[in-house]
Image 1 (cartoon, rainbow, N blue to C red):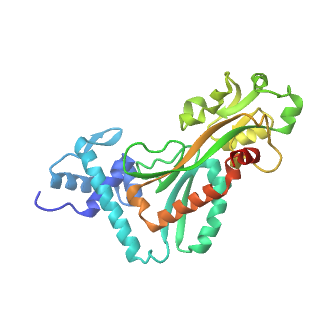
Image 2 (cartoon, helix red, strand yellow):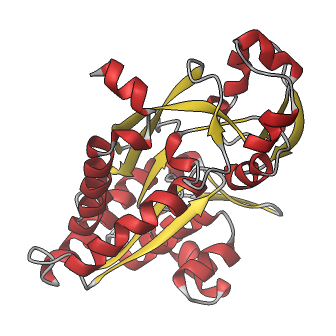
Image 3 (tube, rainbow, N blue to C red):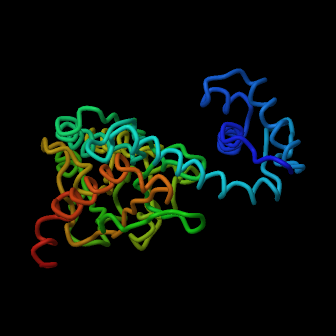
Amino acid sequence: MNTLPEWTDLRFFLELARAGTLSGASRRLDVEHTTVARRIDRLEHQLGSTLFDRSREGYELTEMGQALLPHAEVMEGAALAAAEQLGGAEVAAHGVVRLGVPEVFGTRVVVALLARLFADHPDLSIDLLALPRFANLANREADLGVMLDPPSTGRYMVTRLAAFRFYLYAAPDYLATHAPILAQADLERHDFVDYVQDRLASRELSYLNELGFTPRRRLCCSGMAAQIEAAALGMGLMMAPPYAVPDDGRLVPVLPGFHAERSFWLAAPADLYRLRRVKLVWDLLRHLADNNPTLWWHHGDIRRKA
């Protein structure tokens, strides 16, 4: 190899590696798919290596492609950091941050948090991915994300955002028309609303298994927002963290002594974490988590913990 590859070719390589298809990469790069293919062919010829295995399903990195990937990501991070600094971002954060969060957490907590952020940083924009699953950081679906399972491989900055508890809730009308719940054993006679079990975004969401018996699931949903509405309509008991439960009396705590504890983790690719705009959102979420215990625990548990 007599010359170094062009950075723009490496950018095409990164987007194809993340999207897995020419059409997906072309959408992310806003170019024709033939342009992506031509750039990849040129890069492979220049490096003298095959970077992707082609199939009907798409493009998958070869061993040489996997070896190139971390180097290209480092170059991408350096380019982003240089552009940010030269654009004056050392004084004020600007640009777009893609933040991946669980659906209900994003809707009920994060959206309200962003109003003040925008007031303080008028040149900052957020793409909020409020999903019934967890954002995929490996393919750069998001710049940072809140999740139950932190990345175990790759170059990431990771911190435990908060320990929180899933508590039992039910609609007052449901409790008034069903057998009383005075102890955990009484729960066996009741209906539950839960996640679709073969579509769990994380094994950490199988918290009903901690009841000590197989619950009678009357309705299973792919997301927590639908579960909350179903439980509020009296379809059964559900488990949720305090931040997810509307403060309108439609759901009330049941058997407060029972809970399942989990942790949210905050993660970002190491190269993106260096960007001021990403670090700003990271610090905002950390401050939220550290200073609002009632999002995560019932008041009584907070007092006992203190």
